[in-house]
Image (tube, rainbow, N blue to C red; front, side):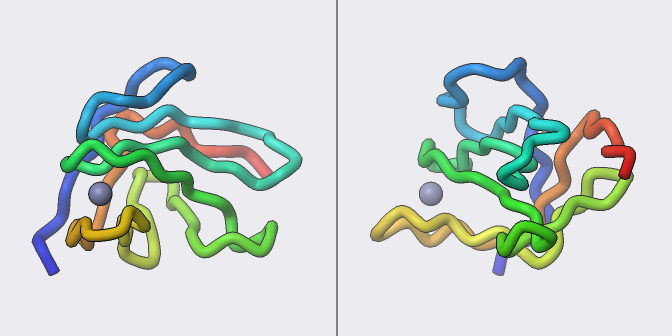
Length: 89
Ligand SMILES: [Zn+2]
């Protein structure tokens, strides 16, 4: 697994630039962020509180590690979402 990788924050909308994410907040489906892996594949982070697989702490650290679901992509890393805004409960 590669070392910690930082994703750069972009505005909500199509997230197509490698290594970026758009934050979602207070979404009833538990969607935390839309991401684009460094190899250019889209992905989503969904809260474990909504039967998803991930959580993001107040400093933007994603747990557990991020695995790109694109077939043939080997991106698997600890990811930090830069400029993450903590979600108030
Ligand atoms: Zn990928």
